[in-house]
Length: 240
Image 1 (cartoon, rainbow, N blue to C red):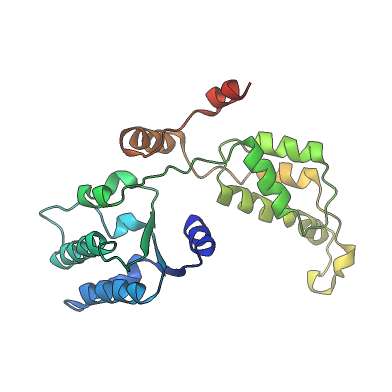
Image 2 (image 1 turned 120 degrees about the horizontal axis):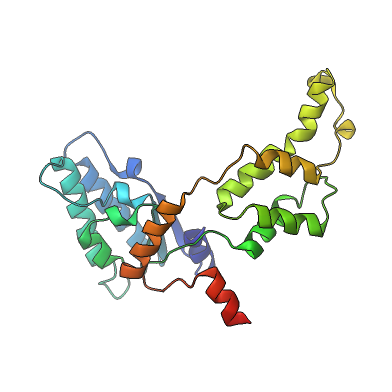
């Protein structure tokens, strides 16, 4: 989303790249594809290349790794060095990963801005729930949304989306319990989404991010990150 926002605001061409886009079983094809990617990006006035799960391409090099993988990393690092050399080149590389500690040291040097995206705070979770409920027929009040934001501490954006999707199925499950044929049910007979549906969904939609994983990311950000992360409690005290 950050890559799309940058491309939209700067009116740049957006390239969405993954490891499967660049890798090939044929010798030399991965390097050719990488060179072609940067060559095409240079043809446009401004380009943003977004690489999802960049650690799958630029993992730490070792003596036991595959030769083709090493050649791909070498070519990619060479292109990263030359991406902004020309005066007419306007290329921005954006990478995302959940395992930054596995990035190669050379890649870490070339990716000069390293941003840690934390889990949404209580205000962010409340806003996410409001956005997801925007087009739904529901009877949930502002106080109940605030309660849900409080209960979803530690949930990621994807977790909250999964929670809302699961809660939205509760009215349909009630129809199934009444032995109704769902294929013949009129949509107007489905009751509005209620607070109790979210409470029921919370019992089996759990956070996907563990505290040890968060601690590893915070330690990595403290050591290599471009901006420090202020804990939520300290941030609240600072605002007060």
